[in-house]
Length: 537
Ligand code: HXC
Image 1 (cartoon, rainbow, N blue to C red):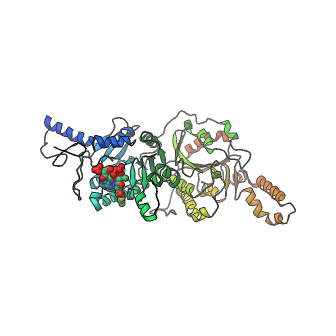
Image 2 (cartoon, rainbow, N blue to C red):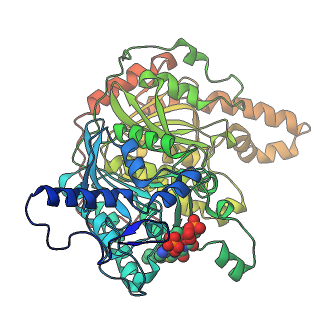
Image 3 (spheres, rainbow, N blue to C red):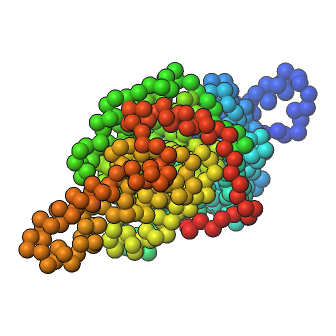
C-alpha cells in the first residue's frame, strides 16, 4: 500500500473490486466491508477536518440529518470514475457524490450529496451517472429529488466529458420539472454552468457564509470588468436571497437548512399525480378571530401587516414562507387550511404599499406555476394599489413581468380562491386572481376598494377642467376625492355584479375559506390540447 499526501492508504492498482473476491468467505466479507469503509472515509480525515472547520458538514452527515434515521439506502457506493485524462488522479469509491434514497417523515425521496472532500466534489462522467440514476428512479417511482451541491464544478481532468455529464443532469432536471418536486441545496461552491441545474429545480436553499453561486467568479469579474468583489458579495446566500431571488430559502447553517427542507417536503405531494398529504393540526375549521374585524385601519393610506391575517387564518398559525427576503411587497408560501396544503399569494401593505413590481410579479408567477404543477390550491389575499410606476420598472420590463403573473394565474387549473381585503385597483385587481381571469371563488371584506384608480388619481383625471378653473382647486379636489371614495371604493358594486361571490365578515374568513376548499375539491378544468403555452419569459 502506498500513502497519499494526507497519510491515507491507497490501493495501488486502483480502488475497489480486484477480481478475486468471489464468494462469501470471511476474508471476502471483510474485504467488502473494507471497500465500504473506504467509500465512507471519502477524502480522508484531514479533508473532513477542513470541511468541519469551515462550518460545513460532510456529504454523509448531511444525508443523516436530512433523512429519517436509518432510512438511507445507498446506490453506487462502489462506483468509480473510469479514467482521468490529465493523469495523476486517484480514483475514489463513490466518485465524490453519495446517492440513494431514504424517507422524510416516512415518505420516500431520492437524494444526491456532493462530497467536497473528494476531488473538490467535482463532477465527471461517473459522478453524473450516479446523480442521473437517482433522478431517473425519482421520476419513475414518483418521489421528490433533493440534490445537495458542494462542488468545484466540472472535473477539469475529464474535459468535455465533464461538460457532457452536466448536460445529462440538465436534461433530467427539465424532464422531471412538473412531474416530481425537485429541491436544490447549495452548501458550498456552485459556479459556472453548474448553477443551471439548481436554478431549473423548484426550490433552492442556500447556507449563509458557506455557499455561493455565480456564473463567473471574482477572478473573471476582475479580468473582464476590472471590478474587485468577493465571492460572498458576488454570489453569497444573502445576495441571492435578497437581490437576485435565486435562493428561495437562506439558512444560517447546514443543520437548520436540512431541517427546513424536511419541513418543505411535508407540504408537498410526492408527484404531480398526487394531492399533497393531509395533516390535521387540530385547529377547529370554524374558529373565528374577532380581531380581524379591526385589522384594516380606517385611514386607507395606513399600512397593516398582512401576515397578521395569514397567521390568523392558517391551521395552527403555521406558515412556511418562500422567498422571505426577496420582493417583500408580495408574500408567498405554504400553509394549511382544514389540513389541506394551500399556496398563498398576498400583497404586503407594509412594503412599498403592497405594489406589484418586476421582482414581485416574477416571484408570484413562478410560485403559482409550482402550485398548479403539484395540485396545490391557490389562495390570494389582495391589497394592491397597482403596478409600480416609473421608468425603472417600465424599462426593466414590468409589462413582460406583470404578464407572467397574469398568465400563470389564468393557466392554473387548481382551485383558486381570492379574498380582497382592501385595495384592488386597475390591472393589478385583475392580475391578483380576479373572477374575470378564472378564479373559482372570490370574497371581499367590507373594507375592500375595487376600482379602476385610487381616489386622488381618479378625481384629478375626471374633474381636471373643473379643478383647474376653480378658485379653490385643493378644496374641490378633496371634495371630488371624497365623493369618488363614497361612490366607488367599496365591494358592493362588484358584489351586485357577482364579481365577488360574497362580502364576508373578516372574523369568519378562515371558515369560509375551508368550506370553499372543500366544495372545490373535485374541480375539473378543461384546456385545449397543446404542447405548452408561451408564457412571456
Ligand atoms: C478538478 C477540482 C475542481 C475541479 C476543485 N478541485 N475544483 N478538481 N476539477 N473543477 C480539487 C482541487 O484541485 C483540490 O484538490 C480539491 O478539489 C479542493 O480544492 P481547493 O482548491 O483546495 O479548495 P478551495 O480552496 O476551498 O477552493 C474551492 C474552489 C476551487 C473555489 C471551488 O477549488 C476552484 O476554483 N475550483 C475550480 C472551479 C472551477 O473553475 N470549476 C469549473 C467551473 S465551470 P487537491 O487534491 O489539491 O486537494 C463549470 C462548467 C460547468 O463547472 C458546465 C456546465 C455546462
